[in-house]
Amino acid sequence: MFTGLIEHVGTVKALQPQAGGEARLSVELGPLAEGTGLGDSIAIDGCCLTVVALDGALAHFEAVPETLQRTTLGGLKAGAKVNLERALLPGKRLGGHFVQGHIDGTATVKKTVTGGRWAEWHLALDDGGLAEQLVEKGSVALDGISLTVAGCDGRGGFWVALIPETLQRTTIASKKEGARVNLETDVLGKYVLAMLARRGLVGGAGGKPASKITEEWLREQGY
Image (tube, rainbow, N blue to C red; front, side, top):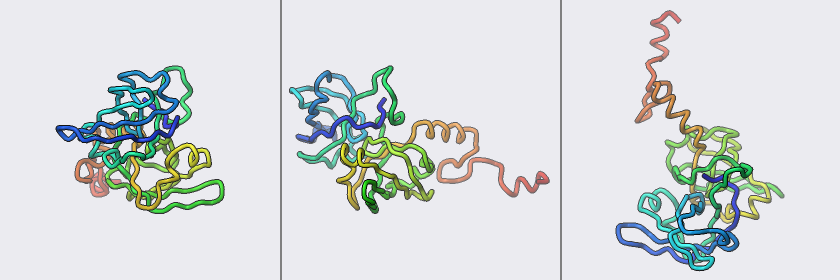
């Protein structure tokens, strides 16, 4: 479990393909290496990975095919900068929101707007099916950064407001038009949607209404 508050921007040293479609990712952790051990979880651009080897401040991770296909990690090159966050410790303040490190999909930056000390990033979901999981003033994690959805159009377009602290301490400022970012929606919203779907109160597979309560049904009942 993570908070979406980035601790350090690390540097990718290598991404080496492995047998079976996997890859070995090597990242320079910088100050986060102190206290990090084998088996620890670290979110890399929002994706939870396990430390499988350590060489000083250089940590090695294994990314399975599912991770490489669903996230942007498969496109990383040596020298790339990535957001890093260690797993949340019990008793610590939760300054962002609950972030699992389980990426739901990606979004593409469509427009950036700067206004002095603030900025707006406008994005579009690469999988429009995730649109129902984004709500205005709700939480979203982009490349592991806990952000508030400033607005959304319900069709996969949304935007976030960025303060100077976020722009300076993360990689988001480098994500210009056309860049893809990892996206994790709010886990609480996922559970609510799943519960409503099981009760037939929201749409089911294929976008078809799951509920039997329609306008025609209401008229037949005398409403």
